Length: 415
Image (cartoon, rainbow, N blue to C red; front, top):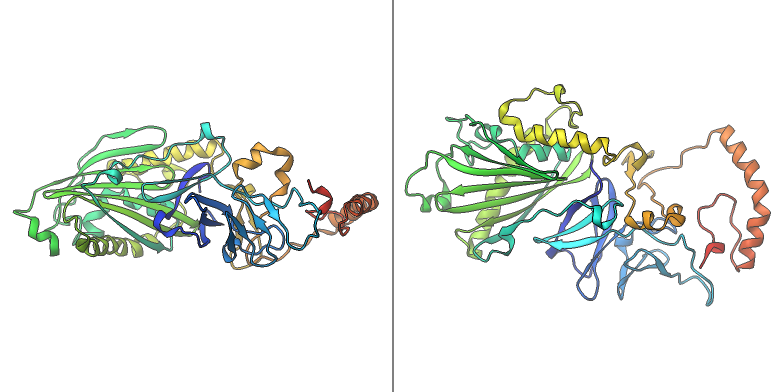
């Protein structure tokens, strides 16, 4: 899974003043709108006792933990601890990760990484969104497969005659002509000619005669978006397919679909039904693929000329892995529990405030503590004994309850 990109994490219309949890790249986040309508994205974890902030409520523009009422501002800093008497400070470590957010093209985008603003890859441009001649629908579905498998499936033109022969491809003419790719650092697009199946249902009313070929524009935008533009005889259908990795083995597909024919709201239901139908045809095939994760080396799977878009993605993926943009073992916590692991994605604030880098925490849902080896435990106890007296004096001077040596937060570090 790739970090340091803008991820479309939710439909914009689904984010309100009610806190909403989303899971992306194996980490839980909470989304909500401030009073001025701007969206906030925080790590969905209170640093005090690990409660989900998404179960809490908003107090002005802050979000209050449902467990002990700790309030976190949009920048992630804790601004109120109800249990503290008047005059007692708030620890510097009382904060959660806050991620940059943008709202564009009907989606809420969060930057999941710690790159400075001027080094971040761009959000792709979707010109149809602001074109009044297009109507828009929104469709989503969970696929039990890795997001790169679902992502590559949509740029795979050669599968359409066999998986979508009744809706999109033509099994009687499955050939894919050679095509040229236009590519930059963040995207690759190609025009591909396909043979369509006979029109059915509502669309059949607009067909005067079946065309021999249909020109499609297919392409990918990093990290996880696929564009499919089908030029039908009676208009354009454009789908932007966001393959959101819930974790390594589950993908939430969110599609924003545009059409400039049958643009009345009465036709939305038919448009959504057609998109869902295509996803349901893809679902069992993609979920059956092995290996479940995309291979790293190109020779591990056989490639043809018709696979050129997938090959372009895999080569660019290798470059980004080498540059350190892949979520590796250092970004995960192994735990004993239903999840097995949890991802920790640093926010830009960690890089901007290196002295507070250890202030952020992430705890795995469903995990149990990992036993400390005896040798390490003995060393820890010896080191701790030399610090206990100093820590006790320091915390007592600030009116706090002394903590055991090695604890991660102390009132003595309050501002």
